[in-house]
Length: 134
Image 1 (cartoon, rainbow, N blue to C red):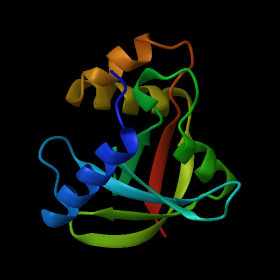
Image 2: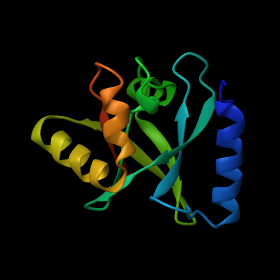
Image 3: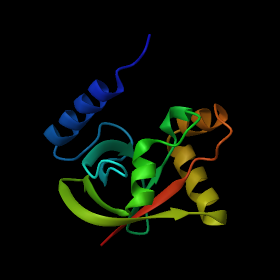
């Protein structure tokens, strides 16, 4: 059975907003990126790890073999909009690498164990992105 990801995301977004920017479970945010090809805004719900005043997201795509579209969008234009905890703000996205990436990945995997399961499905390392308020 194929999951209608768009419909599922629409329900998650509506529920998140109805709860005032709070998730029922691990911390979540809504990330708006600018389409790398289209130039149009794209809204994606993502789990995140709070870290030193920034939000850290993981380009897991459920263990898909390719990076998610939102990741490709923010590489093309790192200026993004973040909606969480009842507030919306502009942020700058930057990929985290090396030991810091490994530390953040392990911290998120400890909170959300499916991240490790998703990583095991694919040979690509998941990009780790820090979103810092502009």
